[in-house]
Image (cartoon, rainbow, N blue to C red):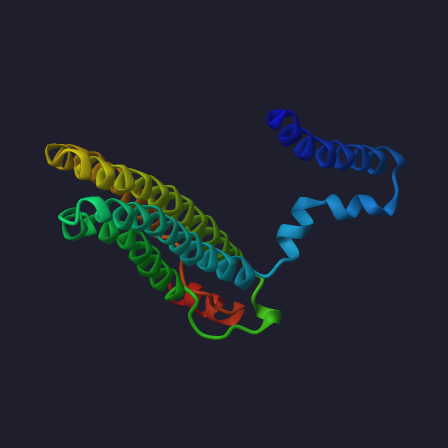
Length: 216
């Protein structure tokens, strides 16, 4: 019953949207321009894409870290009632979760350095600025999703490590190794985000780009 309700909630709006799209496509109405993805990407501000990417980078990273700390902290507090010795040792799981948020902060600072000075709207829509905006957006989204999944992974593993340590102290180191491998996933996202935005330049006006081209 739960699966039926889940799929029905997702499928009905998608089916209605598909019917509307087919109607607009084949009737030739003016609404068809609303579905012009290329026009939307061309007319949207590169600054907007960059800001959204930076927001997703830090927001999803902090969400993953908070989720992991919530799951791990509740298990440490619950298991510490029966086995007080686990409270200090298992704080390393909290540190691993917090590192995920630090990854997001670092990448948000790196992405923010690409914004540069203020560029007037009349001189903003240039090929270089489009590339920078899209690169920061997808780089921030990649880093944010990787850190979100990393925080959840570390949180769940750290929670089980605390409960296993409360039952058998010999299991702590073994589960900690698994937790370390889970925390590396956030580092993968950080590296890919740097690679995606490595060739992106700062936002420049059309006049600055033209003068830079002439100097070259």
